[in-house]
Image (cartoon, rainbow, N blue to C red):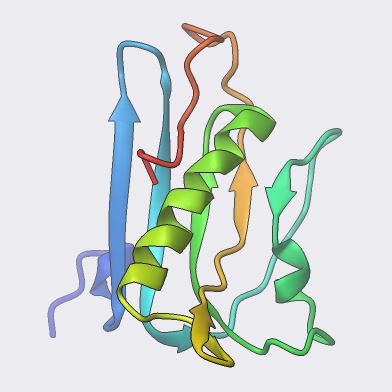
Amino acid sequence: MDYSGKITDIPGLRVGHHTDLVNGTGCTVVLCEEPAVAGMEIRGAAPGSREVALLDPLASAQSVNGIVLTGGSAFGLDSASGVVKYLEEHGVGVRFGRTRIPLIPAAVVLDLGFINHAVRPTADDG
């Protein structure tokens, strides 16, 4: 197999991206075809995240279905809701009774004020 140095060289990973060049924001979604072990590094004076406790080695969930990296600071975390909804509709996630719960940790970058502070990634972008 030829490797180009891209994350998509790794079998079983799919990557999607929404870029809003006009407003200077966006989000990236990495989905795993099979649940995957993930880790984290939290840095910065005001880190924003969602579901990162799933990445703790002592968490009962030992794998995730993907990750979201989003702009928009805390507002951009809504983009992960779109990913969770999509995966639920496709039957992906941890089985819990009669449903499946997609496990999607998310982290933010502060891009508010870069171009337009009033526009942030939403669930429709995820």
